[in-house]
Structure formats: C-alpha cells, structure tokens
Image (cartoon, rainbow, N blue to C red; front, side, top):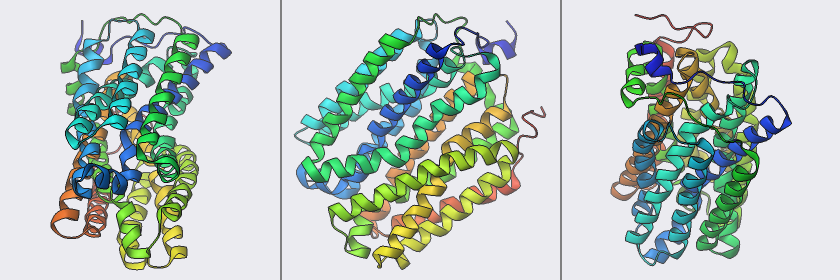
Length: 404
C-alpha cells in the first residue's frame, strides 16, 4: 500500500444515489447536530449548574473542557480502530453512548459524576463527528460529495448556534437537568433513524492513525488547523461564559438571555450558508473576515453591552460570524488535502474539539482568577491571532495542494 492510499483510506463509493441516499445524509446531519448540541449544552446552563452542584462558574465550565479533550483524543483513535466495522452499527453504538452520558449528566448529584458523564459524551461525539462526512459521500454520487459533506457539517454549525440557546430556554423553563434529559431523548431518536434509514456500510481499508497524523506535513493543512485552533479557542474562551457576562454587564435575566442566545443562533444559521458560499471562492478572504469581525465583536461586548439593544446587536453579529467557522474550516482543510477526505475530517475534528476544551479551560481560569469579563478580552486576542494566521499562512489554491 502506498503512503497516499494509507492516508486516504477507501475511495468514496456510489452506494446510493436515490432519495434514500440523501435521506441518509440528512440523518447524519441530525447526528452531528445532536452530538455537538450535547457537547455544548453546558454553555447556556453554567449558572444553574454551578449553583446546583455547589461549584464556581469556572469549574462548571470544565464540563465542556472534559468533553472536548476526550473528543479530540477519540476522533482519530476511533476512526482508525473502528474503520473495518459496519458504520451503521458503529454510529448506533456511539449515539447510545451519547444518550447514556446525557442521562448521567441529568442525574449527577455532584461534579465528579457530571465529569464522568461528560467523558461518555466526548467519546460518542468525537466518533460521530469524525466519521459522518466520510459516510455521507458513500451515500450519494461522486459529483454530490461536496454538497453532502456540507450538509453533514451544517449539523455542527446549527448545533453551535441553535443547540445552546435551545438548551438555555429549556433550562429556564424546566431546569437544567431537563435540558440534558431532552438531549438524551434526541440521541435515542436519531439512533432509531440511523437504524431505519442508513444502509449497511462495510468499511474497506481502515485509515491508520499514522496516516491521519501525516497530514500535518501539508503546509496548507497546518495553516488551516492553526486558524481553527486560535479561532475556536478564542470563541469558546468567551462564549462559554457569555451568560454570566450578560448577567453582569446588561443585568439580563434568564428569559432575556435565552432570547439573546436565540438571536445569536438564528444569525448563526444564516452565517453558515453565507460563509459556505464565500469560502469555496475565497478561503483566505473568508476566514480573514470571520476572524476580524469575531475579534471586534467579542471585545466590544463587555464595553458596550450595557444596553440590551446593543447587546442583542452584538450577539447577532457574533452568531453571524461564528456560524460560518465550521464550514469554512472544513472547506479549507479538505481543499488542502482533497484526496484524503476522511483523514482530514478526523484531524479537523480532533483540533476543533481540543480548541473547544482549551478555550473553555482558559476562559474559566480568566473568569475565576481575574474577572468573568476578562474571558471576552482573551477571546478577542485569540481571534486576532487567527486573523494574522489566515492573512500570512499558505492557503489552498483552487482546491489543490502544492506539495513541498
């Protein structure tokens, strides 16, 4: 086997070009939405979670860090270890693990139990996110591989911008534990849809861990991953603590914060599709714009967010910007290594989730050691670092990699 074959894994197969095939892609998108919602659910629930478990908001934010770290480790390992198994069955197992983790979080009497439950969520989420795109391209004709991948990763974007406000609303209405129970139920429903809609998907040659890691040898891939590391770390350093910041700066209550997060979410869905169209034509320019606007918005919120109108406007801009990050980063990395879609997807998943974990961690340290609004300043600085990386680093050109 050549090195290229080892990295790339099995070529996409035209297994189903019918409505059933696209239905399967939609189910995969629902799966990514579910697992990323489960990962990010604590963001909108930090205040009541911390109060119930008698821990600080910074420590409660570690529930996001734990899941991100586990997912970052699990993504490449599971892609390699489970590559030869029927993907439909593997997906069912992973969604069951996510459901169990959310049930454990809902029941948790203390932070230790919550942490253990979040480990389970990280395992399931890392595997689902890493495998979904590669599965999608096997359900549709080769010419539709790009749109299928975009649809699957739209689940990530929509979860990032709608899952959190939905959890916050449900938490405000019925309590934070009910939000975790609802997410567990959603995971079970998607599991049933996977069993009903997806065909058996036997794997070919598994992608080795070494093959995935060798993608770091592509300079455009390294640049894209570094942009993701800065941008996502900065976003989550700030966004993990957006609820206590809004409470302090604007005096908003739970219902108002839920509304502001919903505004953020709606804007983010729009941003996903706007950026998806732009990044294909101009990946560097798109990520420069996203990084610039995100940096300015995050820095402005603690200074100008005393007015609810201004806070709402800034949250809408923030959502519009961050909504485009997942599809833009995926497009950059895949265009940098177009023959190695599965390995690139696993590597991006690992870095993305490591950045989520580090962002929640450093944001929590800033919130506990300095002040909760300092998490916003940290986020703005890291987004500026992403801007510099996007502007100065090597970028994919016309979807091709210039090997060096």
